[in-house]
Length: 255
Length: 255
DNA sequence: CGCAACATTGAGGGCCCTCAAGAGGTGTGG
DNA sequence: CCACACCTCTTGAGGGCCCTCAATGTTGCG
Image (cartoon, rainbow over all chains, first blue to last red; front, side):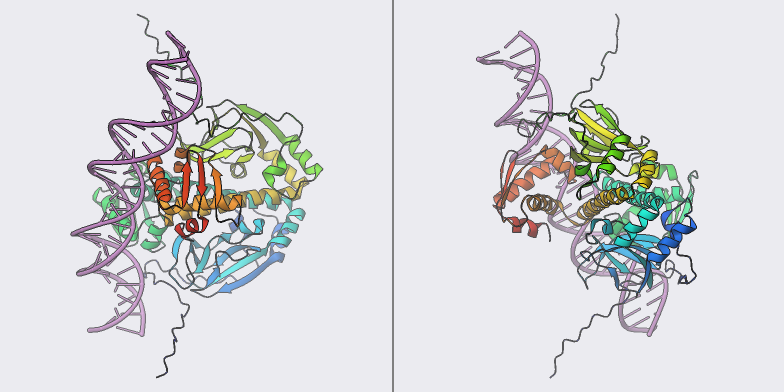
């Protein structure tokens, strides 16, 4: 008998998102403008600055289930996500990757590594068909000399990453699982409406991905959500979470 | 009777370090050159770039036990440590602060917040008499327009922070306490001598600070060190750790 | 209808924290 | 000089938090 080990691992989306959170197939932007202003935040860039970035930009598409890049890969360029969803994490190739962060376009995938002449420190896995833009490090450095104001924007982008990561380290070392979940929910509430005492959140990702980002297991997340429901702090219906008592969340988060 | 609440809290070093790790009183540099090259790494800066930074630099001294800055303070400037030791962490004023990171001069204390027009996200507590240099954000931005190459150096500094924090988040969410300790020791060995199978480390900080940075308690750290000793992977004598088996450390760290 | 993926719930156990006591080292005041 | 206070580290006992494993329910798809 011809025993051929033919288990070719077909690249495919690693997960099936429930209908409720499945992202609508976002139309790929084919019009001229790349979303620099969204990536770099206000104030708006000058036309000259946008043109400079456009000239350097190199587009690439990645199929769902493939990696945009892998940890350890040389990182010669800044990488930003133009369309689609990407999970950042680390895992052996072929094996399931544990998501440490989930990004929806538009967003930077790696705005730092290129400056160190180093390697990406995480894997980036396309969850949907994905389009990314890359800005080669060397030409980018030259562009900064012509357009020095761009540098401040990139510094701000990196500084934001530092702030986010610092907060995450603090949460992981100083807060237990209930406090981390309360903090995560509270942050989302504030982002929706800074003053309201109640708000409604729609979860845009699988609960197991949320758990993974919070450094806990899906089982623990489920139990904690149940506990918050029992305390009447939230009401959970599938992927819709109604927050009934925002101050209680802040209290539970320890702040 | 005149009951005067006279318990003035005298600012003093919050801890007593054992002689073995107590830093030698480093002479304050009063000579002209500020250590920009050490802070920003190779290649060396041009004389013009150094002069530009010198012009913006504003020195400040902080007594042992005082805060260089507190979390939530407005951060109008980049802050670097010129001499002394500083513990970064978060804690109520007056209360004991849990160290999340310990820095020895020269090093950046906060190279990011100023770009966000935001606030420091951690407290910085002087453990020894400390001298810091501050570079105001606005003038700094102007300097970058005159000296665009400086921007790349600052981007690299921030990118390094991002890489370090990303690794720390990964360790905290994906490794248990023994693996984190093994990884920490292994990293120090590699920094000392990349190829050797054994090396000797001198701990430059209290073990409780090491534990705090690794997200565990001093008791757990002590037990783990004992366990590694029993396995003949390391030998501990006070603040001297002799690593007998570097590959075993790498294995225990899960990589 | 069967299958696959995700979420939920329960039982059990291991890791690590908390609390407490004691040893060793360092600075202070008598 | 020496007793004492203070800080740190170590070691042990106990317990709680959260992970692991397993079974079941739900939803979407072929």
